[in-house]
Image (cartoon, rainbow, N blue to C red; front, side, top):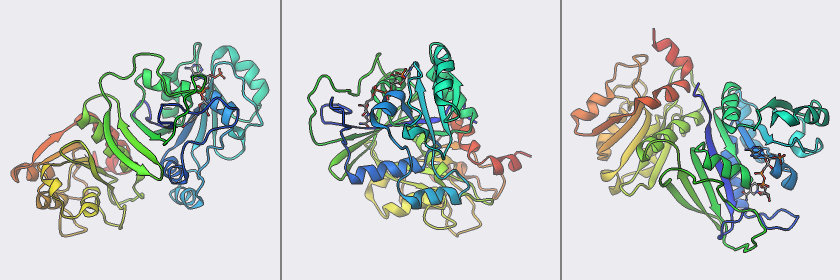
Length: 371
Ligand SMILES: NC(=O)c1ccc[n+]([C@@H]2O[C@H](COP(=O)([O-])OP(=O)(O)OC[C@H]3O[C@@H](n4cnc5c(N)ncnc54)[C@H](OP(=O)(O)O)[C@@H]3O)[C@@H](O)[C@H]2O)c1
């Protein structure tokens, strides 16, 4: 298990960077299409974290709205909704807040001095965890990882987003920019308490979602290769489970760094491989001749389920470069995907420091293969 979850920050701002206005009633910056997009993101996460300020100001439910999405999670043996997580230094939380509604796991990380009064106030409304004095965000992430949270969605508010960004503890930032201004210095805004991440973020996607512009940035260690590959690894968590096939994620990135397509195993049909799905979504596309495909597992060079291997698809599409994390263990095939790609003139980069992460999602298969 990686030492901390993948951390996805998600927020909506006005065109001038505000997260809300200064009025007591919550300002909704997203439209219905963007709220639905966020709902899909929630459905792919193990836990949602908001700061105590957001619990107090917005009283959010932190539930998946679309019952089909929660039913799909439940069918895969996951809790119907993500766990709810908050953090507080003062312990000043109202036990009647929707955050504490029965249902999914509720975790409250509390600074040591406020632990006893918080326990008296909240009773058994949540699991209360001593997060140190001062409260440590690094500790919270390590503790969440130990509790099985592999993917954490951080939905705000201002202080929490700033803390995660300034501490270099974010892997992705989904920023929805609404088409109006707030222009009120008293309102909370996306702001950093410190110098912020080293170097520029990697812009992975820009998309119109209803009336808002979605900007998707990748952060974290390493350059764009590392970040895109980590994203591919994350996509593999979305795969329908299988006892007989790996869960793999793939991202196809164009020459200018724009994401052309993504895919994950079994995304559309039972025997789908991740690279195959991503390339099917694109069809014949001249941009592929300058693209890179990132795959959490080395593309297959032999395959029982279908006649064309992923190596075959990549070579046929004319993709000149492949980056992968994990070498396929000799479990289902003897395919030497990397060697076949190189022999076909494709440049192949292996980033083995991400192999453990890719393997951890396939641990039930990987353990068998190591013998
Ligand atoms: N547009 C959006 O996408 C979006 C999303 C969410 C929220 N918001 C807005 O953001 C505003 C709330 O932002 P906010 O900054 O007031 O609240 P916040 O970031 O949600 O929570 C801040 C609180 O969390 C605790 N906390 C956070 N980091 C901590 C740390 N490192 N150490 C100790 N305690 C820590 C403290 O709680 P205690 O005070 O209890 O000690 C702190 O006051 C609201 O207006 C809300 O509507 C907007």
